[in-house]
Amino acid sequence: MTVTVRFAPSPTGQLHVGNYRAALFNWLYAKKHGGKFILRLDDTDLERSTQEYADGIKADLAWAGLPHDELFRQSDRFDRYDLATEKLKEMGLLYACYETADELDLKRKRLQARGLPPVYDRAGKALTQEERTALEAEGRKPHWRFLLDPQMVEWEDVIKGHTRADPKSLSDPILIRDDGSYLYTLPSVVDDIEMGITLVIRGDDHTTNTGAQIQIFKALGATLPQFGHYSLLVDAEGKPLSKRLRGELSLEAIREKGFEPLTLAAQLARLGTSHAPEAMLSMDEIVDDFKLDAFGVSQVRFDLKDLERLNASLMHLTPFETVKDRLAERGITDENFWNTVRANLTLFDGVAEWWHIIHGPVEPVIEDEDAEMIEQAAALLPAEPWDLETWKTWTTEVKSATGRKGRGLFMPLRKALTGLHHGPELANLLPLIGRERVLVRLTGARD
Ligand code: GLU
Image (cartoon, rainbow, N blue to C red; front, side):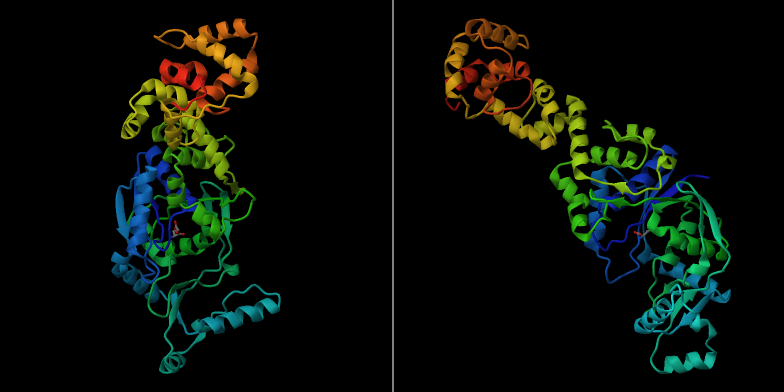
């Protein structure tokens, strides 16, 4: 059986890093097993789903490097859901209910006041045909609930291990709203069956749904897929991702901040396992390394600061070949430049700053107490051609002439040459800056 998995976002908002994890896990799993990755837009909610969000999801996945093999939209498939509905009705597993949202709320509150779980009382199921007709004559329209079997539902979860869902603690789920529209539960099962999904990988917030959905799979006579429910992300303070943070952690925001898609993938393919995330140079490496059953059950903390650190280590490792075209877009073709500055980058965009520091204009910083030493250093500057040894040759001479050494020697030179306290190895920078600019900067002038 071909491994077939799906990512099933609702196009009712932007993808955030939590949704991205579902996409990533499914995609990695498909690649690892030579399987198929389906993008399914769960857009049965016609009011809240928009084309703009659907396009945004596709753009985000393309940026993230998670291309799909097939695309489906649930809004194209209502006839399939209608057939399944008829089947369930014929089996007596779907029953009409007429309570309004307020009436249901009142029922729940009454049960809770008595210390009972707020499980629906199946009043709809007990209605006679006359009662239903009378309710409909009042102008009420039915919504439809699936009749749960009270027997405990159990499965071997690929991530959580043996898992149980007790239908007795659940209300019969509403599959169809009173305006005739489908909620997520039934279309998802129908699609998982018809698309031959072999494993459903999704967040732990769906574990309860799985209990009901397994019963629907069985009622429709289908073979069950496997399930894997991963624990959810929390923010750096350990709180669930808030609405506010979801904006900051949308894929669009992460992309706009300048993170590499490879960083995000490497971070999330390991976060929540016992192996710390490491920078990886290709999706293939991440695929090889990925193990779905390595994820634990505790919450997973996501912090943008960790992503920054990982992005920096990816930059550090990235060979010139990989970024050649992106550098060329900025007019940079010098391999030495990349090899020199990459260890000092957090984000790729940082190349602009280092390019500028090398090519100027730079505002040199020369403290009064260093002025004399800098003047001597200028006089001792070797003739070109320069190479990676020039720095050593030069500073050895400056050292014997001025008696300065260590930080007292290197920091004033760094500040004069770059205007900064930190940066790439000066031995590498020096030949890139070149003798002419170095001389100007050592006089304290802008070059
Ligand atoms: N549309 C559902 C969601 O975004 C899909 C859940 C699933 O993977 O079954 O939560």
